[in-house]
Image 1 (spheres, rainbow, N blue to C red):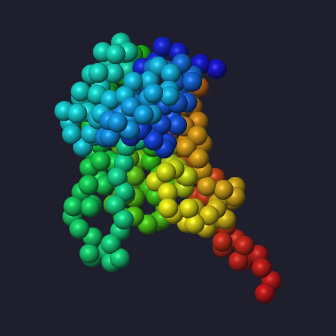
Image 2: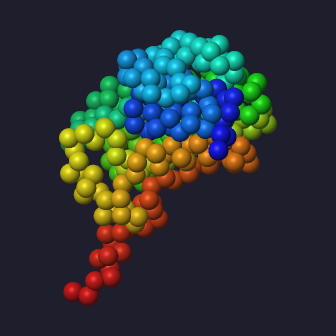
Length: 256
């Protein structure tokens, strides 16, 4: 199945993890993909093994960098049909909320939320021109419930709101805007913390944490014409985490 034959796609934060898996999935279905990352060497390493992929250094915290990446995608592919907002920042919380520094809060929101805004703003005219434009943003279950990380969670919740408002604005112009909200995903961001991942697994009704490919599959669906009448939604990709409190259900089911 090659749902993206002839498509031009730009993915942020695509040098590894979910972004790289998404680039690989869309390319496998025919897309030409601009693999962007703050670390251009990391983007190049990812793009080397993906057919029809090109690497480009992009800092979503910088408007000129974003606009240059969008312009390069349009020039290289002749079209921009899909934008995947995947870049993010997640600064560990201070032990006490009152000790949270302004800089950490500002950084997480600027890269995660405002970065997606910058990319959508630059890409939208080209997505309109394509006649089949779609924006898919990678949010998080942190934007839906409390799983820690104040600034990161606020930014991800903001992405869900931006998805809804932008979807309403862009729909009459032929562009769909949706968001996936992953749960815990086993990426290299967890390197050295594998024990935490193992502890998380029993809390997922489906008995495991997610993989980047789990998220890439959902992004591919929302970006494709299979989702042609879907816009403004948040699609949880989280193994049932938001639907069931496994620990409480087990506790209430005991006869002690």
